[in-house]
Length: 289
Ligand code: PAF
Image 1: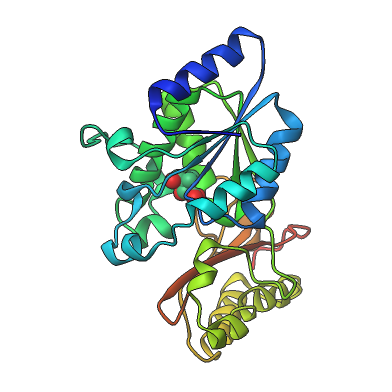
Image 2: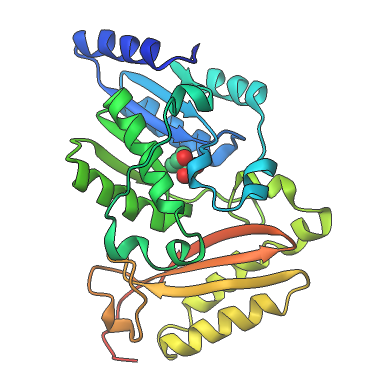
């Protein structure tokens, strides 16, 4: 594996690969890698000749300076994992390399970016669109891989791809969980032992709520999830929405999810660590509430 820090060198390597008719897969990350990331890398490894992983804590997507400051940075350990996973190029640039000038682009991401994370973290998705579009311009991969834990982010990235006209296949990959059900996240390392012991309640509650769908309304299921998680020590739900899987718009009736199974998306503060997770509700009945 080669570690690349300059955009110019990265473009050169990708150009060489493409000149040899090789397919290129990109896995964008912010480092502090765990098995969730590695599952994306493994999929990229299977489906492409050349795999590029970017490791870059993108300042423009943090609306909270404290979160940016405390975001875990573990470059050496990340490189060990990436090397083991068979990555060809780890792109690890500085902030100055990626943003020699401030990025002032405003993406018209529309309704998918206005709810949930978009409402709670103003500017966050615009920052994601800025960095991912820059990476796409640099690498122009055939495929790019994203984890479904950030379910809304994938919808936003698809919208950005449409706006920018990129011809890149966006591949969404399932959430990886710890044995006790907690969704893998770089932020999990910031949980205290007690917070870590209670955090699996998020997935457990979401799973329980799926079986309620057949005889409870959307409103009742939402209330169950919020109340059950809030009842756990140190946990506070920021939002819980059940949304259409394409438009990301919250539904009021199960049958409002016209593009497939509704998805429940939750954000929970566990102490001061912000965790997100989601679950699919099988849409096998069309009753209106
Ligand atoms: O999901 C992430 O880790 C980040 O939002 C991404 C896609 C790497 C952009 O910085």
